[in-house]
Amino acid sequence: MDTLCPGDGRYRRLAHHQRRMPDTREGETVSALYDCNVIIDLEFTYVPKKRRKGGLVTEIIEVGAVKVDASGTVAGEFSHMVRPTLAPGVSGNVRRMTGIGSEDVAYARPLGEVLEALGEWMGAGRVRIVTWSDTDRRQIARECAVKGIEPSLPTRWLDIQRIYPRLMGMGKGCVSLGRAADWCGIANDRLSAHRALYDAQVTTEIFLMMASGECASHRARVEAELDGPKEGTVCSSSIGESCGGLAELLATLKAQEATPDVPAGDP
Image (cartoon, rainbow, N blue to C red; front, side, top):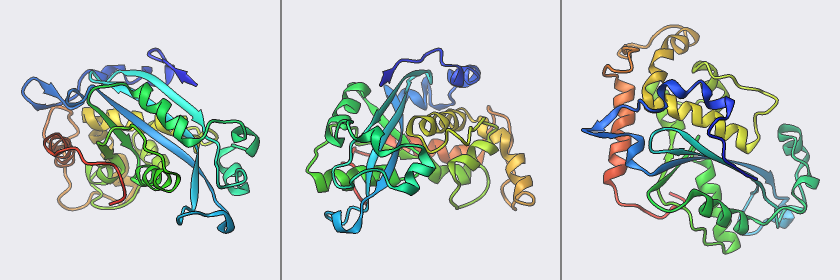
């Protein structure tokens, strides 16, 4: 499925800040550094030990993505099931978590074809892939290496899970997507979680809030849940004012702009 959704209700409440990205340098916005940002999420199944190849423990069974253009507007969605070639089907634990069954992937296209379709859907130009955690990037790199796939995907990746804790005044740490959504006041349907497109949609909302500075206004909720603000983490909730976490996010984005592209792969 490849669906354009400029009027999708899930994103309607973001309209007030989609076009108000903070400046990284005069006349340019965070999103304007790229023709588009593509927020992706993957779902995996486990490969039985006897069927593993090249140390590959999991295989991709679903790819979901949301495309955000340079103005911060959601421009389209991508969703495809993927047929595993090592695992005989979807494991029971994964089926219970995602609702995806072996029958859903049995006649799907293999990974190479789905990644080719994903690359074509992303389009040409300066494109960056955004994820919640680095797991998806590493999975694509490992699985493609084992299966001899050479994906035509962008080489620029941004893991916003790594930035989010510092933006919210938590220092270093690992925050789940669901917890981050709760803290940002984003409706998160637990029954739909752990499906690739839905998780990509939630990640998109968080990404847009981070890029616009709106996440800073939700720091009070985080501080209350973590038993009060940490020393040295006082930050204005105003989008237009300077914020240590936001400044770090913007510095990261600008540093990526200045750094030459490198092939995606394991660190």
